[in-house]
View 1 (cartoon, helix red, strand yellow):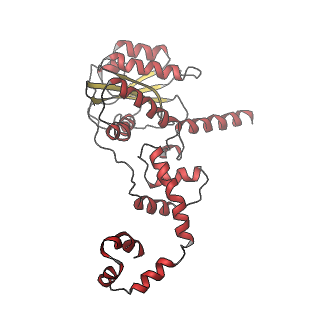
View 2 (cartoon, one colour):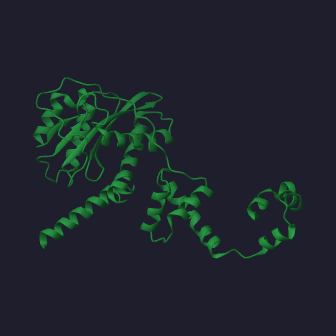
View 3 (cartoon, one colour):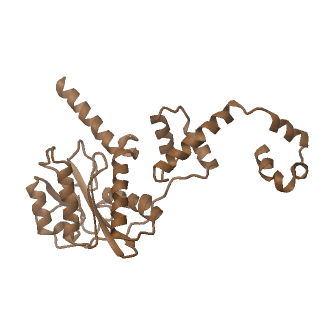
Length: 295
């Protein structure tokens, strides 16, 4: 009541508003003069922190992730309170839209089979990578992106932005992924993609074989055959591309993508990782593994 009257009294006056609301003006003045309660004081202290976390994370976090980040920073607060404060601040999480198809089926090699069958889980890093392509509309024309994601932690291990949807785009992302995991064993890694011609190119499959990886492709006509990679690409389009556009050039998209990938890997909370960033989730895995080995 007092908040509503405070917001409109400069225009209508206190007494006219009270007459419409059928309350005594003395009731408003008594409430307005009363010192704020502990809940109000706590809300006022938390509001800037809620707004900061939402802003620092591309403005895409919903109440759950804002609440989890507050706990990571040492704030003891309930999720319902965070949701209420976000509503008061007119903040909300982002929703993902549809993903446009950017790969076209190529001729399937007899050696390439679907080794994943929609089970996008891995027991450790470098057991399963998934790959996909996307596009971004810029003033200079379309630019294209390739991403490779480790299914264990959802970490983006390789990516590339280019002006052409050719085999080199996917191959450059693969080279980055292999380089980023250069100190780790890739023998037996399953690399999964759709049937796009970029992923069935001879140079691509040969590079996978050189790294000791096994090539897997989705089954024909299955809309879920590469669901994990498409989810990551969809979040990239939702969290960065649609919110920060319009895009002027390839260079602008490339720089923004580099910043977003760093945030995704190092700071973004992922529900599949127990609300931890992918880098932290992998570090925890290696610490636990080393502890078991010592024991």
